[in-house]
Image 1 (cartoon, rainbow, N blue to C red):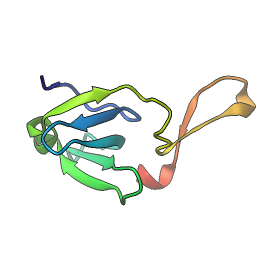
Image 2 (image 1 turned 45 degrees about the vertical axis):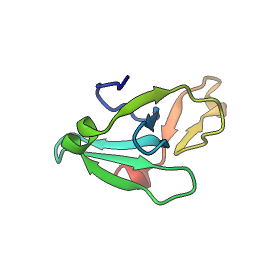
Image 3 (image 1 turned 90 degrees about the horizontal axis):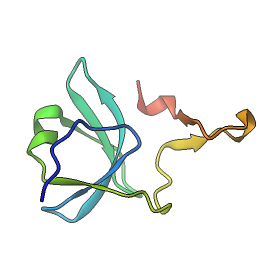
Length: 88
């Protein structure tokens, strides 16, 4: 069963056609681009139209994915801070 929803930064999805896991690292609503990262690979960009054509299912983050998010321990809370290099 595929999952048709808005991409969420930091969420991991499995492409059921290719059995590949992707993490959403950035979304550009203005240009309609979703930036994805496979573990140990360079980020890749897909259009929102391509995103919705993919057979994706959300994957529970089991801790193996380190991704682009860092946890801010200094703040005393677990708030994500995103690597700005991937958001520009």
